Amino acid sequence: MNSKRHFLLHPVVWLAALGYFVDIYDLLLFSIIRIPSLNDLGVVDPTGTGLLILNTQMFGLLLGGILWGVLGDKLGRTRVLFFSIALYSIGNLLNGFVQTGTQYAIIRFIAGVGLAGELGAGITLVSELLPKNKRGLGTSLVAGFGLTGAVFAFFIAQWFPWRICYFIGGGMGLLLLTLRMSVFESTLYKKLASKNHVTKGNFLMLFNKKERFMRYVRSILIGLPTWFVVGILISFSPEFAYHLGIEQSIDPGKGIMISYAAIAVGDVAIGLLSNRLGSRKKALHIFYIITIAGMIVFFTATTPWQLYLSTGIMGFGTGFWAVFVTIGAENFGTNLRATAATTIPNMVRGSLNIISAIFLFFSNQLSYVNGGIVTGVIVMLVTYWAIAGLQETFDRDLDFLEE
Image (cartoon, rainbow, N blue to C red; front, side, top):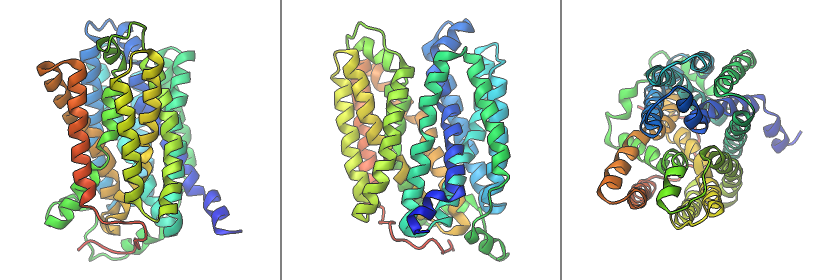
C-alpha cells in the first residue's frame, strides 16, 4: 500500500472528519434557523436577540477552547474528544425544548463549550499521527469533509421543524460518541505522558514568553476573516440586502449552504496548493485575495444572485481554515499543542464578539453597509499584520517541547 493510499485510509482522519461534520452542523444550525426559531418563540427583536444568542454561543466556544485545550495536553487528545462530544450532544438535545430567548442563549452557551473541543483535538491527533508531508492533506480532508455539515444542516432545516433539527444534531453526536471509542492516542502524546517532569497543558505558558505569546496571537489573528464573513456578512445577509437596495428576500440559510459548500472545496484546494508550493503562508496569501474579491462583490451586489455568488467566492476564499488550523498545531510543542490547536480556532470564533462590536459601532456612526466595509478593512489589515510575523511551518518536525 503506497503512502497516499495509507493516508486516505487512516481511520483517525475519517473519524476526525466525521466529528467535524457533526461539529459544523451543530455550530451553524442556529444561524440557519435563527429567524423561524425566534419567530416561533415570539421574540420581538429577532435581529438583536439573534446576535446576542450567537455571541453567547461564541463566548462558550472561547471558554471551552481553553478548557478542552488544557485537558487535551494533560489527559490526552482522545479523552477530550469523548467528553466534548457528550456535552454538545446533550446541549443540542436540550435546545429542542427551549421556550424563551433566555433559555435559548443559555443552552447555546453550553453547546458552545462542548463544540469547542472537537476540531482542535481532532486536528492535533491527525497532525501527530501523519507524516509531515501528508499532515496538511489530512487536515484539509478533515476540514473539507467536515464543513459539508453546514450543507447538510441547510437541507435538514428545509425538511424538518427547527426543534427536530436540534434533536437530529444531538442524535448524530451520540452516535459519533460510539465510534470515537475506537480512536487510539497519538505516539507523540504517549511519549510525552511518560515524562512526568515536563509541564503539560499550562495555558499560562502561552503568555509567559514574548516570542511564544506573539506566535500565539498571530496564529489566532490569521483566521479572523473567516468569522467576519460567516458571522457578520452571511449570517446577516438579509439585513445587508435591504440596505443595499435589494428588494427580493434573501435566505441566510441558503447563503450559509452555498458558502460552506465552497469552503469545503476551498479546504481541499488549499491543502493541495500548500503541498504543491511547499508553503502554508504562500497558500494563505492567495486565498486571502480570493476572500477580498468576494467581499467586493458582496458590497456592490444589486441582485440576489450577485449576493449569493459573493457568498460562494468568500466561502472558497475562507477555505484557508484548513491551513490555518494546521499552522496552529504546527507552531507549538507537544506539551502545548492541544492547548494551542484547540484554543486558536475557538479564539477566532470568540472574536466574533469583538468583530460584531466594531461592526455595530461603525454601522451606527456611518451606515449599515459602510459599517460592514470599514469592519472588513480593519479585519484584513490585522490579518496581514499577523501573517507577516509568522514563520513557515510546512516542513516542521512536530517532535519538540515548549520550555
